[in-house]
Length: 112
Length: 115
Image (cartoon, rainbow over all chains, first blue to last red; front, side):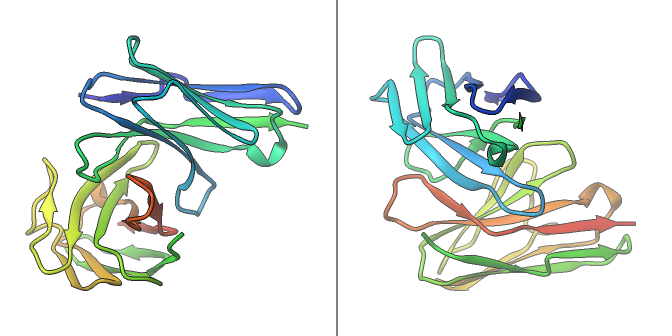
């Protein structure tokens, strides 16, 4: 039972354009959502997060949107840069357990 | 943010043997976690390791297969016992620094190949 799903395994965008990565979840008890970026041979790096009491959080080029009624979140990167090319994981947690449930990841390629 | 190192960074092992992976953090943290990322898959939580108590394992993971030690607030080990090729994965430790709710910081991972 995949509680956090990233249905697009890959995404390719042109440098300077917007990248939109999507994530769906099934567990309504999740109250915190995070995005991580992972380069090959490295551990995931925290990017941005959002609490379930908000619908938007912005940090520089990165914005996360949360639609609780649809159980959907998205990460927008604008403008996209070649250095953004990596695997992006969304993750969810709930109940202050510290446990993170990860999606399958989306490989983003930003072409110069 | 916490700086985390893991040893070894990679290893190739024979089936039936065991490997112990070390995770070292540069600051004291309460909560440490061990994850597995099988080829082409997502990160899956193996267990939560808190100092002074037994590790808490997730469904599908057992202590006999993945014994964990947490002797102090900066160090933990995960052992992959009696390995089979299905154990070939990247094993990652992570910590929650207690300052940022639910944000976890990950080590670089240990890439394990079992022949």
